[in-house]
Length: 211
Image 1 (cartoon, rainbow, N blue to C red):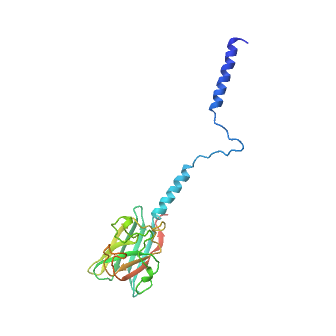
Image 2: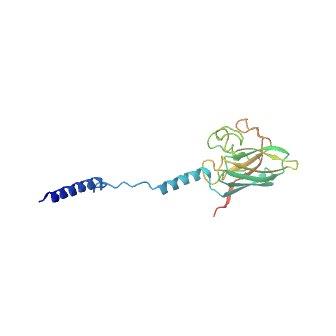
Image 3: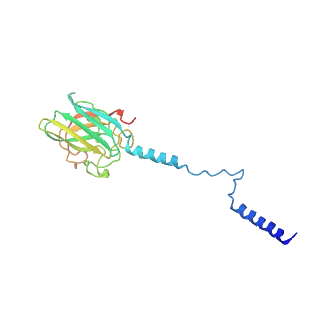
């Protein structure tokens, strides 16, 4: 064998060894192949968890409010948005001035005193406060006060970013909404010293604005 042919054979053998060393190892019959994470599934799970924290976007609920004598005094609408729950309504038939306004823990409105609604909605065990307090310093159901004018009417619209509608720990669907006779001082524990309960309604889901 000439010197050139011998060198070619040795060179080819070295190349084969290098290529074999770089090739990925194949699993044996006893080894299961390792699957890479499926990022689309992870993103879907994270999106679901976020939605559970934020409620169901576009979901709408309503609470028709009645006095202890059974008279209807108006309606409050709840809509889940990206910023929180939009709460808006028009209520009538109370004396002028600020009145305590809260979501309560039970979905019951037994007249005449509405005590069946229980205490303020407070699933995370926080002290009583007002809507401007940090989440850890107020009940989920603490809306503070709504203002009744000289004609005995209260028209209001605000967004609360602590409650949710349709999902999550602070979901208010199915809970009682209460208007009190007196102002909530947003300090006295555990009720804000808002006095007796003037009106009550159950927050019920009625539709979704998202198709």
